[in-house]
Image (cartoon, rainbow, N blue to C red; front, side, top):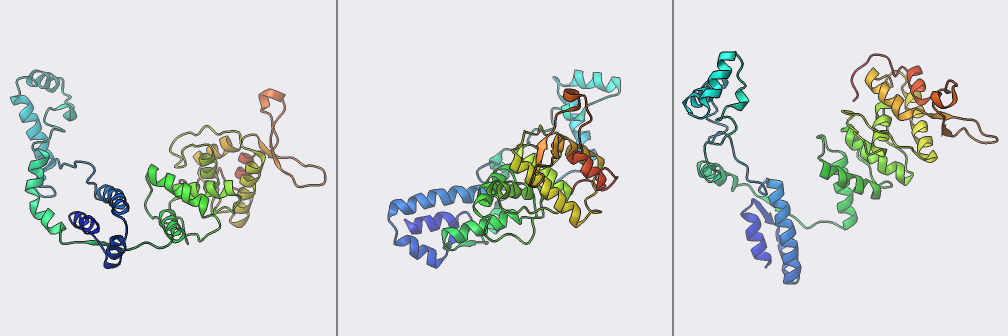
Length: 318
């Protein structure tokens, strides 16, 4: 069974190392079969083989026509089509023709099988490259390595990998951390897990605090759209305000951000203010809106951001 598994992997450009093949050969067949099924599914997804990818031009990347020639051909074919000709002529007389509505556009000129046949040479060349699979380490080591890889990724993660990162970050709050989390969306996911576990936050800018607030409300941590912020518990509000204080105190000038980010900060922090308590620190609380009391509300997170330069013109959120 282990050798059959190895042969199936080789057809996809992977191979079991000698040590892994020997280890699997000692395992029961049902165990090897389960490992093989899961691994082959993963390999197929890594290669994109779970989807039938087709190229618009059969010889791609060769054989791609000039843009003008391509659209001219699409228009000519539409005029030769008895069904499409009347509509195309009417739009041409009006002086406006939507090229994306032409029948030829978006229609494959070949089947998936024809594309594969045209790329036989490339498929053979790809077979010369093999990725060797080695035995993994302990579960703890593997989880740590995967967490560091996802958190330290230099490219944005997809939704599925962000969910994986959130799960791994919750189990690695006290373990090794990547030297840098370059993708801000990934940092927001990691900080949400750390905040929920009571671990120190990894924040560099005011925008990091805003992204974390969005993540806590299951909003858009990319800051591309509006987020409806939820009512946060007192410990969470206290942690966010403390993180904001620390970021501003460490680098007041670099804490300045764009007006659009300042408005989002105002929305996330509206109503959260500091109120003195006897014999203790000044925890945050939610103050009533101006319409509810008729009085001007006390200093809010947004105004604190403004005093640190949060509303001054600057670069877009990092």
